Image 1: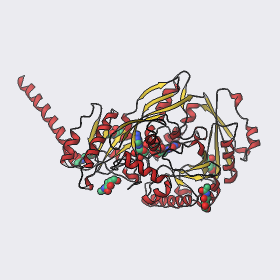
Image 2: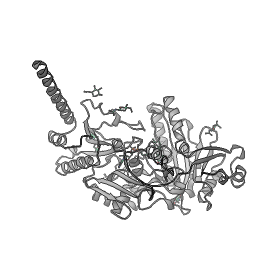
Image 3: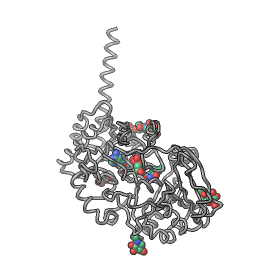
Image 4: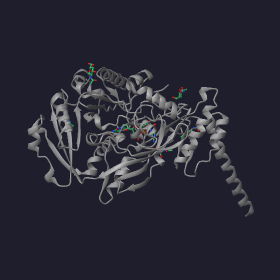
Length: 503
Ligand SMILES: Cc1cc2nc3c(=O)[nH]c(=O)nc-3n(C[C@H](O)[C@H](O)[C@H](O)COP(=O)(O)OP(=O)(O)OC[C@H]3O[C@@H](n4cnc5c(N)ncnc54)[C@H](O)[C@@H]3O)c2cc1C
Ligand SMILES: *[C@@H]1O[C@H](CO)[C@@H](O)[C@H](O)[C@H]1NC(C)=O
Ligand SMILES: *[C@@H]1O[C@H](CO)[C@@H](O)[C@H](O)[C@H]1NC(C)=O
Ligand SMILES: *[C@@H]1O[C@H](CO)[C@@H](O)[C@H](O)[C@H]1NC(C)=O
Ligand SMILES: *[C@@H]1O[C@H](CO)[C@@H](O)[C@H](O)[C@H]1NC(C)=O
Ligand SMILES: *[C@@H]1O[C@H](CO)[C@@H](O)[C@H](O)[C@H]1NC(C)=O
């Protein structure tokens, strides 16, 4: 009996020993022994874990790839934080360690992963880097039903927020949305967060009341438009450059019950975009939502407007004959569909499920996302889009206007200006078969379209991979201010290095 207990005890001790020894030696795959000693001594809370990549750099394959599937980078380690203060501890260590470095090659970098939807290397790092997996920080902290806001941890998905707020009485929801609801709050607020909802509420970065941010020196700072406002606006649309968003306070509205979605087809770009702008600027706000897309399966391409009206009572809805009388679409093509507000917001999920079921959702996505000034949209379409090869697109092409006066210009977002105060979002959401020749052709096509857009006053949107020179052009007069904030909030250049904005 004693013998058994002894054996069990011995086994327990030795396996513990093997475990800790193996994780320490995995640390040595990437870092110096002094870095490893300090890293493994950080007293993270019990709900957090720091996992090192193994010798073949295949253990953290979930963090080596993203929705783009265009490149793979194997990180040194991943922190799965259970508490925001563990991110503070990690960044404070990295900051201290890097500040004493003599050899820049051993510098440690950090980047967050929201839900992995970026398509270039924004949320990836090589073996000098530690990824913070924000998915564990995804709680709803508080809902204030009087003041109409929700406090959430930044790893939460918008879908989870919607489900929770719609259950309240009365049902509530955030104001601004993206078309796909499985994006994280931190990821979209670091980019822009946009869909046809922006026609009334602006993008998600214009719909935030307060943030908790951990800077590149490991300081935990609460910020808002009235307190630490420089950091607040720097982080919004800041592409992960100035701090890690760990909590966000999002304004809510009373949710409508139902939605009627109207679609109609146009055969020319001019009437399509001018109708979109008419509905956007309509003083009576006939529609709550204006989007649109280009159908590259028809020859020549056609255009589909998508308009949505929220309602509790159907008598407030515009009739089809009224719409036909004020629009330029092909009257026969008008359709309308009623759905719950939830099903409307989540409607793209059915397409995603279908793409998963036919096995192409995990194909490479050489996406292109741009802003164009409204006054050059026809020129852009005719010179760069109309003759595109549909085989290289193989996915939706979105084109819709948003008003610039609903984009808070104090944020870090770069966007064009236009005398009409309207700009267009243009996305080529390509799917490529996993064939290097096709991917290279799609990327070359992206370069062609992007170059045309920049020549017409356009700017890159999310998912862009730019060189430093292109970033300077992208930000224009904002670049100097952002460089100043980079030096203030992330002086050692630790955060999200693969954007290469301030190299
Ligand atoms: C299917 C699909 C649909 C999309 N639809 C839309 C849309 O309708 N509207 C729209 O605006 N965008 C859309 N996007 C684009 C865009 O990629 C995402 O808005 C953004 O990348 C957020 O995704 P994510 O939460 O998975 O973050 P990730 O892609 O993981 O991260 C994006 C960037 O933000 C940084 N980051 C992540 N979390 C934080 C944080 N807490 N603090 C600081 N930095 C952070 C990352 O390091 C990375 O640089 C879509 C993307 C996909 C794949
Ligand atoms: C690393 O981990 C992966 C996935 O768990 C495993 O397949 C691989 O064999 C491991 N490599 C080494 C060298 O341990
Ligand atoms: C990696 O991703 C797969 C698929 O999403 C998931 O099932 C698995 O649990 C993940 N592994 C780790 C270590 O997170
Ligand atoms: C696009 O055009 C093709 C060819 O005219 C048509 O078959 C298809 O239904 C259209 N797609 C959409 C989404 O309207
Ligand atoms: C439209 O494009 C022309 C170049 O053809 C450019 O000079 C002009 O500034 C652009 N307009 C806007 C609003 O950017
Ligand atoms: C790893 O990534 C960092 C940050 O982008 C970069 O400075 C470094 O050169 C990269 N190292 C290698 C070997 O690619």
